[in-house]
Length: 139
Image (cartoon, rainbow, N blue to C red; front, side, top):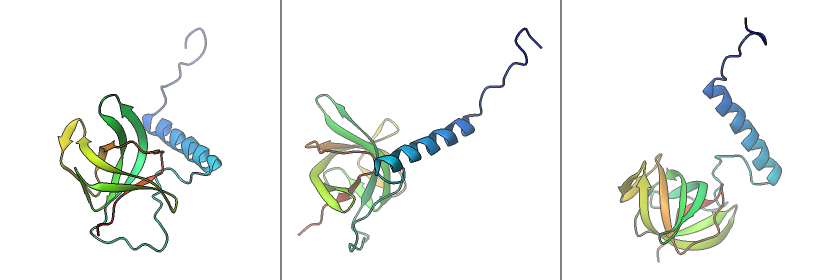
């Protein structure tokens, strides 16, 4: 025992992450965005195997390259060159094209379902956490 009592053990990383996730979910719910990590799909639209969706977790810009959306591919396969639309709730808020894909600092040509990736988009779109990027329907 020291001068100021028993030394505290450092907090467990899993406990810190659990508390952070609870606080983030509460913040998003208060802002009316919904649950963190929840993927919102458009009502009445049936997802087929040809449609790929990507749940946005974070967004940032790279000077000279464009806008990067990080997150997880929830269904289908996203490929470089795909035309995509951005959905917020049930409303389409913009359209763009995937100009690059990176996974864990490695360039990729596609992002299959279940993989975490960063999508480089041009032109820039008003993206936010919780948005869904979906491949645009082809005529």
